Length: 146
Length: 146
DNA sequence: GCTAATGTCTCTAGCAACTATAGCTTCAAG
DNA sequence: CTTGAAGCTATAGTTGCTAGAGACATTAGC
Image (tube, rainbow over all chains, first blue to last red; front, top):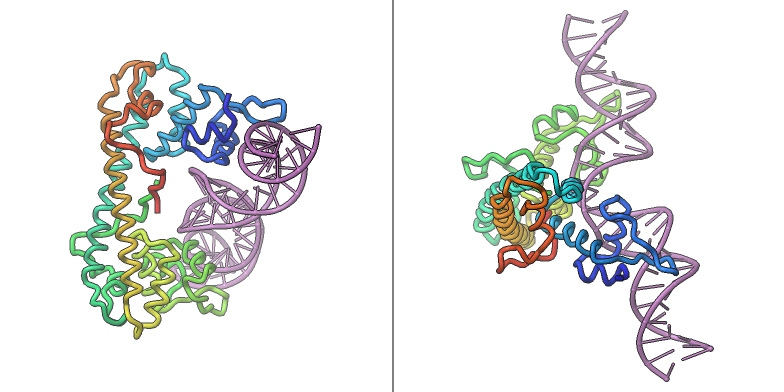
């Protein structure tokens, strides 16, 4: 049996985060020791590792909740899991495209900085005037984070 | 003179967001009409467009605050603005590298989905077992958002 | 056995950067 | 002159945690 600290260390998740996951129902309520401390077994470790890994891959907690409930019913067809993963992939691809465009624009900004006074600084100027962006790039509706 | 709605439409920023920017001091307090409605001029529009554009590029509001105070003092050297832009570029490059790795892993996950039952689904399996990731990729410490 | 250090407990509040709601007032068009 | 859209303030909610306070539990060293 693992205390919450050991569990966190093994799964690479901070202790308050584990308690938070329990609070929002991603992890079941843990059993307690005589002194009211949470105790975890192998199953909890696996579930937490699953969550951690999915978070690493950018899945939202809601998506993870769905994936967990799927994996709790292993006789169901896996179309739903596949759909979630595909949606996540599409989202990642969208973010990638966007970040690539941003990178190009930031690079132009930085390269053009004359090293002189603010008044002549392209960094500020480019930010102030959208029309100075590379001609074919209109910024998409702001939304680039998971 | 523009009302807050027109200003928002022209700058591509929602009305409550403008009020929020005023509240946190990114925009100066707007003048008011006889009926207590905010009125904006060209300068406010430019400043808001600047903010919008910088947000599009992924700058935090704190970074934008710094950039704005720089652009308010155009006689200063522009080293600081350049540094902020370079830091942002580095951050974008880090996120790009990470997202590229995630994309590869998600693609493998999706491709491997057998289309059968959850019990055999690689999507769930891969998420449950980090060791099934491509061999050379260790996930970085989770942190991929602006 | 005792003490000190660490670990854990609950609860509350805070972070970014907004978004949404409620209940009002003001404005512009017909 | 009335109606409906747009504006006002103030408060609370969102996501995914993180930090703090103050109390109890456990463990290591002596």
